[in-house]
Length: 378
Ligand SMILES: Nc1ncnc2c1ncn2[C@@H]1O[C@H](COP(=O)(O)OP(=O)(O)O)[C@@H](O)[C@H]1O
Ligand SMILES: [Mg+2]
Image (cartoon, rainbow, N blue to C red; front, side):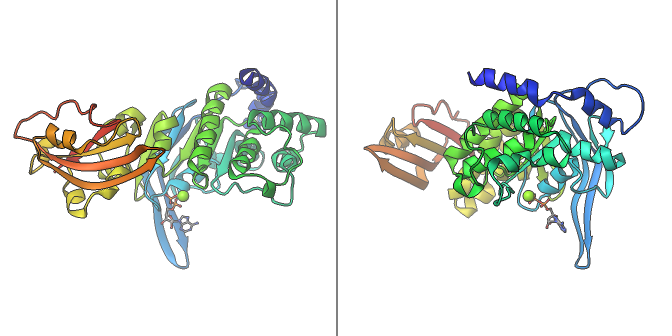
């Protein structure tokens, strides 16, 4: 049923492909092929320096990255790494100080007037704090981009209905944002971003203000939208689990530069850059500093032959310390533990350091806990 609804929405949300193609040629005569439903983005030698009376901030430098069309592309990096600056170049909320940003092969710096308005229709955006107008109803918030671009009333009503159904907010037309939960507010944000039928959806920390359960629902919705509407999503997050859940590609920014980029399975499976490793180790937070500093991804690089292992218990198995220690001949140190007892089940994680005999294989750890992960070696 949801599928049908979305299929319907797809048809009516993108009724004017030809119109958009025309507006994209900026008044030039002659036809162009209808735009793809999913947009592509390319950053070519992009740099961004903010200049103010207070001085200069070099936010981005030497960015050469292609965002493939149709996928979900994640951007991660520490606070201040330049993630938002990069995203805001795509819809020209900011302009680069060097290099070019190409959307569907066209340099966005060349867009002006009508073409810039058309670009903003093709590139929707959602925000961490939703940016809804509190004095307006859900309907009016979502309708706003269409009103601004002079779409006729009946057409607006139809498209607002479609997107609200798409994001699961049918019946909420007349509610005010203050009456909605965080998840519902973000759904309104998504509906407003989709109502113009964009090819690209930019999400800046869109789930950071939400609880884990609502985060999951919004991510599921974004993934659904990506698959069914076939648009490209570029998403900033500080939650690695978000990347793992829904992204195909990831870009790691470090102090304004590309640390690494590639398919998620590759970057997360074999992180090459220290910035990536640091981001990927929220589990290592309980690690004493002396160990964290010495942790090496490869056993051959470690000084002692000690594996640092995170074990997760979900309640199905008890953390059996004797069995754990026995597995490593008694040479086991407990580094950190968080365990809750919920309804008679132990849930949480242990962080241990296990000494290995030289050359001894680590072997299969799956019997020790619900999930085991070797964080590295010291
Ligand atoms: N409008 C601005 N004026 C001046 N400096 C800015 C502006 N926006 C961002 N910056 C600076 O640029 C750097 C990158 O910021 P930002 O792109 O927001 O990073 P992130 O989103 O990764 O936290 C930071 O040092 C930030 O302080
Ligand atoms: Mg930011």
